[in-house]
Amino acid sequence: MADRIRVSFEFFPPKTEEMESTLWEAIGRLNPLAPDFVSVTYGAGGSTRERTHATVRRILAETPLVPAAHLTCVGATRAEVDTVVHAYQDAGVRHIVALRGDPPGGLAEKYAPHPGGYRNAADLVAGIKRIADLEVSVSAYPEKHPDSPSVEADIDMLKAKVDAGATRAMTQFFFENDGYFRYLDRVRARGIDIPIVPGILPVQNFKQTKSFAERCGASVPRWLAERFEGLDEDAATRKLIAAAVAAEQVLDLVARGVSEFHFYTMNRADLVYAICHLLGVRPVPQTVIPGRAPAAREPGIQKPVSSMAPDSGSGASRRPGMTAEASSPLPNGEREKRARGVASDSLSRRERTKQI
Image (cartoon, rainbow, N blue to C red; front, side, top):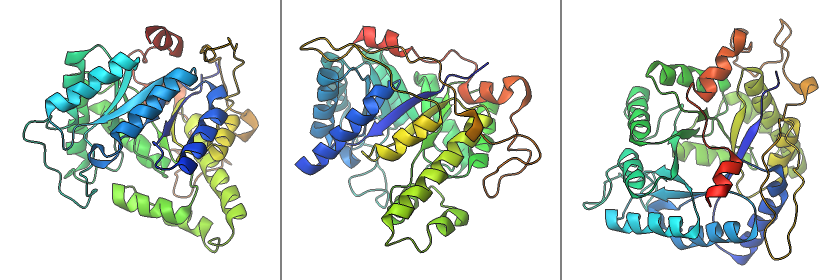
């Protein structure tokens, strides 16, 4: 039976008119793929709050997309955060991505809860759920959050977020699939059964990606650096290599039972669109009513391009550092059950759209 491939996209609010144009070109390009939702980030210390709100409002007004607004608790009182939740709810938002957030100075600055604020992401999730029955997604860190003393402590925090009401977690981006599945095994062993959706970052610019990874605690394997070596002045080849790397990663994940992906788009659509195409995700026809955004449609059953999927036999195509055992799907869909969780998945796109 073919798996349904489900996707979601992350965007960040633009700072300039040029960046605004780039963002909306990306949204326009990816909109027909009918993602489950699109998330909009919130800057360090809430620095992009107004721009985040403006982007979310425009998505609601001008597209059929279901927005998931990011919300952090850093540097704000409970009352200030609660006001934002109410504002999102009043605007028609029914899905929030709850994050602790980074200090205004970034990860180099030590985090300290606001004296009158929510202590952490789990406390924030509980606060959101007290205000309204909104869908709440959270983050997960296969290589642990930079502030966590250990992966186990990080999983403790994830468990607290789930206990508070979170129903989905999107991971920090990663490049080694084996590490994701080891993390997933530890998460399931703790009794956490919500979907743990892989966060995929297509490498638009290797140097920027490496710098970003260093700041957020994600590792960049040597084999990845070697693939981009010598291409600093060759943007066209870099783009081809980036597409190949991302395609290899997601098709391997599909072969091992994963059927849901969250793409960090960096407000660029081309690579993400191409990867979705390889996964079998196709544009969904939409009916346009004058004066209104097209109605959202339920995504159909999507299956990846089978000829591109890694072979699970002895000659399987594997990422560097991947064991033969790890590259083969577990029998009877067991890996798929682990990846998606035994609990029922979140509300369907159609059901969420009706709520808005």
